[in-house]
Amino acid sequence: MTAEMLLINFTLFFFFKEVESEKKKRELRKLVWEAYGTEIL
Picture 1 (tube, one colour):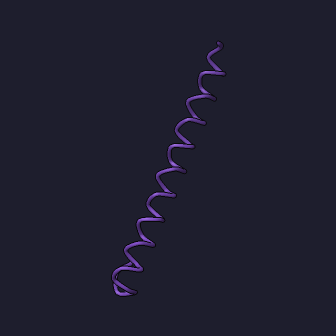
Picture 2: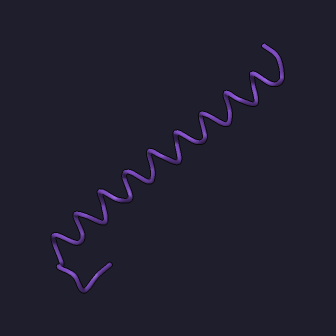
């Protein structure tokens, strides 16, 4: 594996990890929103 390929793999890996955690944060926020109403953002 070349250095460029490694770099691309790492970038994609971290990118998808970020996307996953963003999705989880959004789901969590939605749950909080439904539980407590609109006063908590």
